[in-house]
Amino acid sequence: MDTFTESAYAKLNLSLDVTGKRTDGYHDMEMVFQQISLKDDVTIDIEPGEGIRVFSSLRYLPGGRENIAYRCAERFLQDAGLSGRKINIRLDKRIPVGSGLGGGSADGAAVLRGLNRYFGGPLSSEELLRAADSVGSDIPFCLTGGTALAHGKGELLEPLPPLSGCAFVVIKPSFSVSTPELFQKLDSVRVMLHPDTEGMVSAIRTGDIREVGRRLYNVFEDALGREKSVVDDIKNSLLDAGAVGASMTGTGSAVFGMFADGSSADAAAENLSGMWRFCESVRPMNGQL
Ligand code: C5P
Image (tube, rainbow, N blue to C red):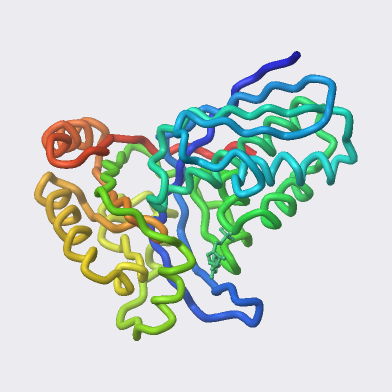
């Protein structure tokens, strides 16, 4: 039996805009993604035989086809034309579930990346990205990582220069959000404000952390119900603790603050950690594919 462990890094949405509804039921997006150092460990065992099994440090996570990691392994074997392998996947979860931090997508991307490397690269980068997109909209970004502008469902990616020097504090309140439900809710509200994506991209290109911080914005915050006040409270706590900006990530419920340097993020996380069950200081990651 061969065993290896792959790191699965979480993502933040520095900005998130929904620009329209598509005929396939999905939404057109314009997002700036940032990969962060918060990660799950994905351990893969490969032995002769058949079948895919997923185990997790969180008992309530599904082990079958409902798990993104399972579907990524299945899709990889199919696309690479491989059979006669039994694949066991163990997920050691540190990325909070139902948080908008892309934990499931990161695990799926780690499975695709790890299996492709183990089998000697049967799929090209483009083929891996296509496989990722067929399983979930955020998985292509989790494969490429770093900082990127995304269009389409989230699969059309344009890499951006790395954000260096800054840091983030990520806080997850006790409630979780269902992604399809929040997309549905957004369809029924009038979005009053949209992020300045172009301004965000220029600020990233010039490396101006304060200008990036000022433009952090997520339209899903307008679709939240009574949870909005919790998200606003966390954002205010992060700003009071010295963040240059704060926003919810993805469909939530995690909220993050951006800090000009690592030591101010560490100090803020220490001060705020007593108030929230999940509160961590993290760093931006550079791309991988
Ligand atoms: O692609 P993924 O499986 O991650 O999407 C989960 C759900 O989020 C979809 O079933 C859809 O309801 C919603 N979604 C959307 N538009 C996108 C991405 C996701 O409506 N661009």
